[in-house]
Length: 461
Image 1 (tube, rainbow, N blue to C red):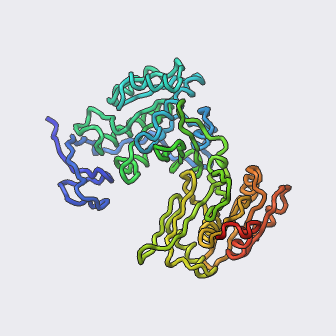
Image 2: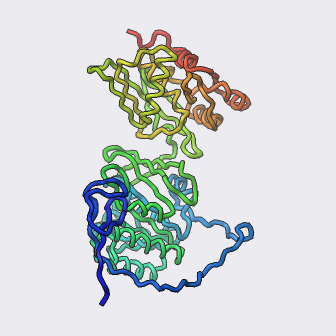
Image 3: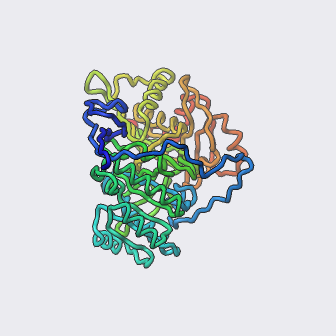
């Protein structure tokens, strides 16, 4: 008879221990080790001959990378130009954010292009998926749906259908009969993911896997799940707002800096073709504390609006609240404003937010953050036709940024007439035939003077 053994596996990091422990040695979490029963494999003591032989990398023949576009421009951009056959893509996001809706629309587009698609639903019945497809107006005869959680049965369906794409919704509901643990456990999630990866690589079928997230926003299950797949996409946004942001945090076949912008409406998710206009808020009257910057998201410049509110602290310790801006970055900017410009902010509450829910990681947005904070502190609006671009150093200097010509071109396309850029970027921008006033600045103090030009007396009591 086979000998049954047990082990204790951490539900957060996948650490395996021979006995139960109150605290996981791997990640330090408490009460996360769960007992799992398994049958040890009897591996042969004789080494097996490898099926592959080492070859020099410079003489290895490599076929051109094949891709087939989905037909949804924003999704193709994030994927790096389309779907690579045999790749495994993990799509994660909060419940109700739109993961199933996006993948159903993707499945219909691929099926309309002539490739059969198998949609595997482990959480919803076939009737529920069909009703959602009808609400979205999907009518492709090449889109097949099955309600199944057994990985063996799913592989059998895919082997008979030979689909171009398989969608698994979700990985936490899948299970294999060879393991006695329940679906959603670390062992089941890891085994199911490995089986799907092996099937994708051997058959050339692209597989999209939906993953749940924890309360902290991380993908539920072992972290090894992210290492096994080729691409990890995060679907971000607020459930009560219409915008959605698809961000690649891992991509073996493309850039991890690209984002896709979608809008949720009655017919599903529609791509936002002009994200700069989407993130800019129309203002009839200029108000203090608002500045515009041009951020590079991958290869695409996007104009975003930064808002700041500075008010007197109610308690002894002033608050610093950020939405879409790194907290530590804001602390540096506030210190530079107080030390180099002379603004007294040590006793003020400072709130900074990026309109539209976009997260600014580009250092070129520092100047817009500083201008919005200074504008709110002084009570004088920034010029609404001006875009501020630049990174701020600790000595108060405005440092040069990359792709400044693309940023200025996007500002001109949206109707802005003035751009404040680092002086060392003037040579690049000055050679372009652009109908826009480009102002070069050396220090943060100079930038604050130019950002308020044309607004003399505005906003004062």
